[in-house]
Image (cartoon, rainbow, N blue to C red; front, side, top):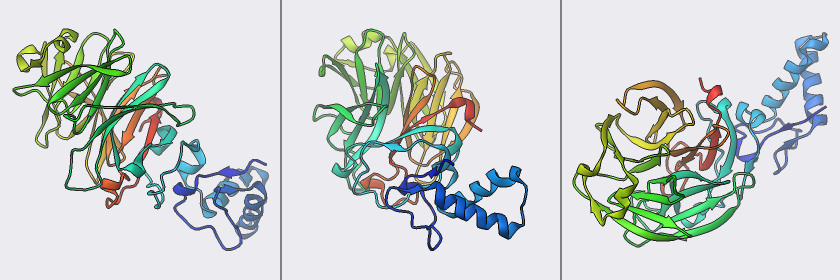
Length: 335
């Protein structure tokens, strides 16, 4: 019999007396079988076809939740500062992989996300103060198969939030900050473009042809489509945009999937959502509940939507939500 595997941080209930679940979070087949047998006797169930349901019930009572049973183990190193159980989150059945956000113990607050080759490029800033929304910025490259950080790039001192990451067709990586864009090639920043006028770099992505940036706004934001040549300028304003699109309020991230659909995230301290929109009009065609604190998103070669969450970072450790992970979403499982 195969045991139920749950990570320690996702167990929301203490195991019953005598189950002895250790730090590894492994609930053994023997323990589950014993508990399942007790449940069978109590319920008076005698048919074998009810065994699976009884074992699942045993797993739940022994400390496994739906996320723990179905999701893969969390990859990477668990931050020392994360001492609370991971929160139950909406659409957990759609989450197919999770990775601890690196550098959380250093005050890193994850923001932007992009897929770069076989790695995830994660941007963010350092702050442990709820009142301080800017700090030194860094770009991390994370291996999605192990959760290991492969390299780090410190961004210029003028960067304070690093809210978005995009990868252009020519391979350049663009980190979007509120008032600047940073182009990276060969592991270093090769150009800085100041954003003037109405332009804001709260998040960013590329559709394979153009660079898109957008603004976070509590009353409704804006998307701008920029030509890659905009990065050749020292500064640009909204007149450089090839298209301007109104979008919902509180948008935190943007990604284009392989079919050309645009996805947005919206979030705050108490709620989060993943939206599919028409990039030409900004009209929302689908909305799925997500964890509070969800930030930027990126689509990998399989079509999974990777997301970052700042809930559980030291800066936001007072939130009820605690989910400091990078996580992959299978869109076909969204409900």
